[in-house]
Amino acid sequence: MTAVRAASTPETFDITGMITLTGKTTSSGLPTGFACAGAGGYSDLSPAAAVKVSDESGTLLAKGHLTGSSGRSGYCIFDFTVTDVPRGIKFYEVEISHRGGLSYTEAEAEDGLALTLGD
Image (cartoon, rainbow, N blue to C red; front, top):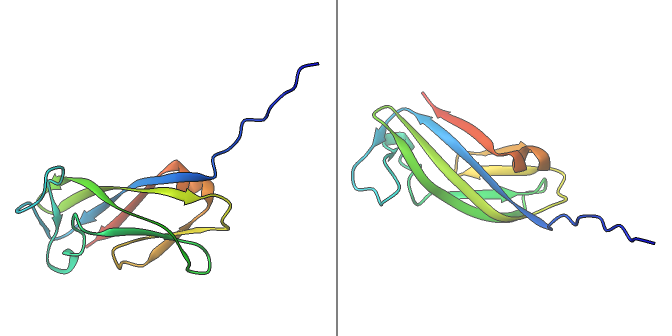
C-alpha cells in the first residue's frame, strides 16, 4: 500500500506588487534602484516608505517596504514586497505610507497587487 501525502502549504506567503504614482515626482538624491520618488504632496512615497499588512481588526501582521522605482517626470512606478504574511486571515489590508489601506482576500494578495495614486 502506498501512502499519499498532501503537499503542505507554507504557513506564510509574500505579497508583492506595484503602485503607480501620477503627479509630482523627483529623480534627484535617490539611492540605487530608485529612479524616481514622489514630490510635493506625494513626498511620503519615497525609498523610506513602509508597506503595512493588517488583518480585519487592524492588527499588524507584517511590514515591508518599497524595493525600487522606475519612471520619469509626471509618473513613478514603485515595486514593493512584504514577506512572511501569515495565511488564513479573513482579509488583508495593505497600506503604503499613510495613504489608507485597501482590502484583499488571500488569493488576491498572493497573486500580486497593482495600485494607483495621483492626480
